[in-house]
Image (cartoon, rainbow, N blue to C red; front, side, top):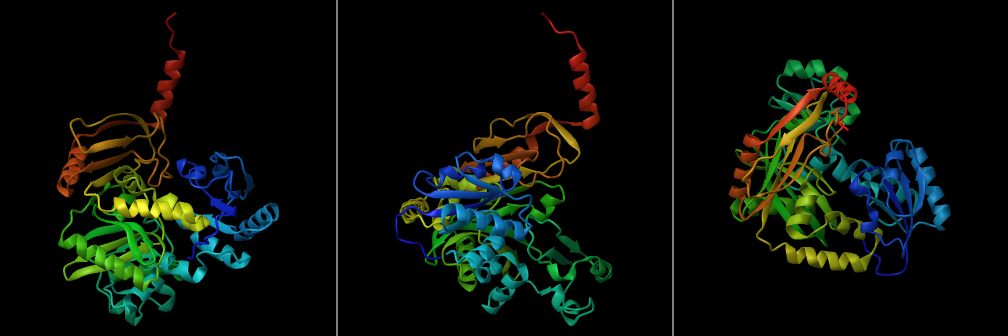
Length: 428
């Protein structure tokens, strides 16, 4: 994406589905300088903190409504110079809107390489990088295709444009695969061999094809296991051969997919015979990743991305220079997320003591009902760590898992408790 060097006011449209602090775009866009209009879901509109023109659509999946809302924004602003979209689920829609309204920025043929898990693997394999054996199910035509016969079970079946392991399944036998086949929307799925090994992720930002800042981390458990109810953690690696190998693999992957400018979140498996590409997003990593970059290095990856998408070269240049300087820091960090105990109510928790690396804990509000919609945010607990080494962070995560205590209740039990509390006489 080319940054417009002009510093004049721009007409910017923002697609916002977020209803939390991520919707604080006033931190990133100077609304006194630029003319800004928002297209939001109802919850997203309620979260905005800057006075602005807002067009509400019931659901971003309705691209006709989205298109009409953006057209209305253009009429209000007198044109559109830039379109900003930060949610992974909106990147392709934003690309199609840029194409329709001739707005500079990432277009569909660029975005698809980072949203479609089959397309990205084809490009990675063509570049000579190691990927698991895989196949787009719509290319097979039937479950007994040659590509499936060549695969070793277990295999992983996943939506091609999914996120957060939603809809991902491990299939252990051929019989299970044959039984699953007729239940799947074939055009939307791919399958790949399961590779035994540790999963790593590399996160950062690139400018002109080079790392501005990048960190390689080791997962504790996996994203799929988190979706199945297990804790998910991550530990940044110390400098060394493995860290260097992961960064080299990440650089080669970004080049194969032609990501020249922007954020990235790449997942890599370390198998018995080397590193395997798992998947990538041209976006800021989820969960606690952006908070760690902010807290450890003073780098707001979302601020960088918005400056890039909005064409604010002055901010973008200053922020990339600061991020590059921070990239030499020896600080290491990590996170731990405990999944939702769906159907339970949060009562209280006792935080572990004496864990020096643990610097931030995020808990749900008292009496919060876990309904399964918490994603990586409104979950049982989120912990952030910082320290001087990979070992220190790993020890802190395991100590937290050992010592964290919490109390849950059934919804019916809580309702009885509240009724009794309200009926009890109060002291004068």
